Image 1 (cartoon, rainbow, N blue to C red):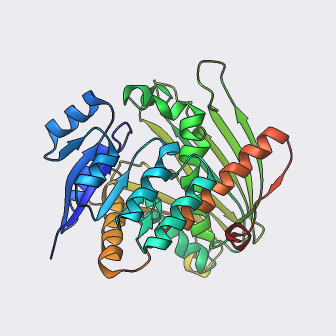
Image 2: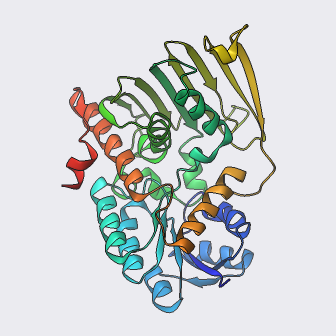
Length: 359
């Protein structure tokens, strides 16, 4: 089997180094090149990993034969690079949220379709075994009709991006927004996937601590799904340094017949899901604490991250659509833009249906 040649476009990001163990764990994949405009960052990377280094991604794709480009550039730069790669027949993994605007994501989707290349983005939370367990609970009606849910993602503080030489993440013109734009897309996609429904309306609020950055520090939103469930999101960069781990995550579901709650440990190997249900499967007590143990796996998001990348490589080799598509990235970012619009106007905002967006 011919190795799938992979290039990394952009290193001023939290994740490029932690993607390397994931790619190394996938059979038949070879990371051959990386591009980064920051010479010190590039020098450190090629010293630690046996890849060809380029100061400009344009030079990389012109000189290095690639099968897959993994793009970690500032969000505003992702569309130009992704479109250029697609036109060369290079498959695309564009790190979420894929662009600074939904219009940028649309440009990537159009180029990938025209070129016939695979396009995906990193919504690997779908691959977590607890996520799949929860989806099964919802599908079989263990919680009854879902009426409400909650998603919390508080991930460190803004200075972690400065430490990673990714200060662009704190500038709206380059990033597109703050925590809702960068992190909220995970939970928006997760609930879309869990319910099999689209968000139809949002209410949003943002909080910005006075300072030198023009992104929000916290964003809150109410998402109304097509089936009537309302999901509250609390997404922020405000976790204090004294907190014992690097983030606080919570996913909770409330239905007419039960509730479920999960506080993911993210990098941990032992997960606990609490379920209380009137469903016959949970009789007689109706309450269970379910545990899921993940095998140790190095790299970004561990075993679920590896599984996600294996699926993408398989989709490329088989010439089929990946499980997570560019359209999934577009839908999540459309919801984020509606949240920001609502926060600015103080009014509820309708999210256009997918067919209306594509028209």
